[in-house]
Every structure is written in C-alpha cells, then in structure tokens.
Amino acid sequence: MLKALRDAGDGLSLGEARARASELAAGGLVGTLVEMEVLAIHLRARAVAVTVEPADG
Image (tube, rainbow, N blue to C red; front, side):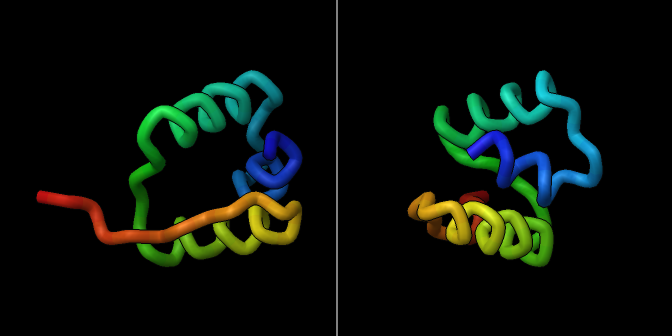
C-alpha cells in the first residue's frame, strides 16, 4: 500500500505515505473524485480492494 500511495501522491515521503495509509485504514481519505480515482487505480494495481464513495455531509 505504501508504494501505491507514494506512486500516486506527488512525491510523498515514506513518513507521509505511512500517515496517509493510517488515515485510509481508519476511515478513508477525502479528496476530489479525480484524486481518489487516481489513488484507487494505483491501489488496485497492487491488489488492494478499494471503493470510492461520495463523502457524507
């Protein structure tokens, strides 16, 4: 997952990728549909199950 996050994340450091992975595991990430779909593509390529949904609220 860290590799996929770094590949999709515009040069995230390893620490930033770890923080984003923790956020993702805890309750998901929030971003634009395009940002989330790009991330989903990278995660799916690494066999990570991903669902992109609209945020509540």
